[in-house]
Length: 292
Image 1 (cartoon, rainbow, N blue to C red):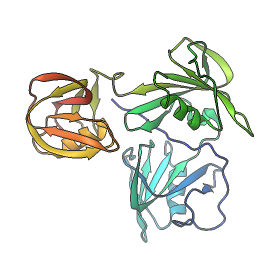
Image 2 (cartoon, rainbow, N blue to C red):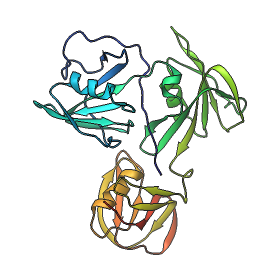
Image 3 (cartoon, one colour):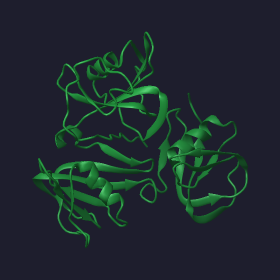
């Protein structure tokens, strides 16, 4: 299963007048020749989502951003300083990971249309699919609306309220806009003033589905199922998908049991033992091995 993810800051962009450098440029906005702005993230790598032509080589972060800006579908870069250094172009913005050796930049979205249809990663296993101009009327939670300064803050408010599965946000500039948190997915109605998003999580939403990794292997997602025994190794990851990727690199691994955390333990198994229900475990069993 492929998921395009985008995590975007909606603050106003500022044009950089000097060459970008870290840590001095951290948190600033760089405007490319196209007029699109990018937020600089020093020491942050969004692992995954690399484009087929990646990496390219660039001598500055400015040049790396220019490569992204001229490449259709690119929304994020990770540059390892060098003369030149590798510039990793990304088609999605995965969960952030600290890496002191990386200078990064994320494409900024100042309009809902620029991110419509994308999914915003809130955590390793939770996403919100953006629905511009759509309002799911009804299902408002008792403490709704809350007032937030931007769309991402509205999503964060939903994530912090158990039972929230959808939001309708009305932006306000300047100031804060109402964020309507919903406990159910109602039919969608057109409303040009609304920035909407519906929540999807790996579990339980994707239970029983097949997930394909970057190496071509496939796994069946098994929510809250633990296959005891066969322990090969324990590693620590920030998501079930990262746990599955670790299985791909471990010889003989055919099954994983992941206890969510930041990071959480990922148990790699060399056999698929008897299944046991465990609400604290997100599982996945290998169906086919890597093809590349």
